[in-house]
Length: 158
Image (cartoon, rainbow, N blue to C red; front, side):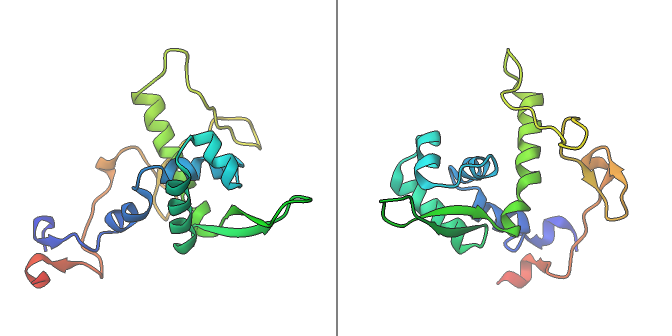
């Protein structure tokens, strides 16, 4: 089956974007990766409306990307903070790739606003394409796509 004949409604990119492609989601994830876990901290840092932030956080919790964990400040009512799950931590390379692309193609005059380094050696961290056998690929031209077991023909879609 050729690509033009393939139904893309089950494509993992599309289903992923249904969750993380909504406005503010990746910025929310950036804040959680950087250590902001409380609603008020995320809201203040992003300056996003409370109802929109609540909806996006709820969707991330329902999808298993974040976990809602209770906490209580002395003298305050119980509240929740948002912690990364394994599924959420797996989004880090996506954010790294976006940061790399932005630093390369939309550079700021005074340089990048964030430099991410390996704790072990201090070298900068970048996203990379690597096959399951450990070969580093230099570009998308080094890959080939073929239909997987979940591929469906456009004619079968009905």
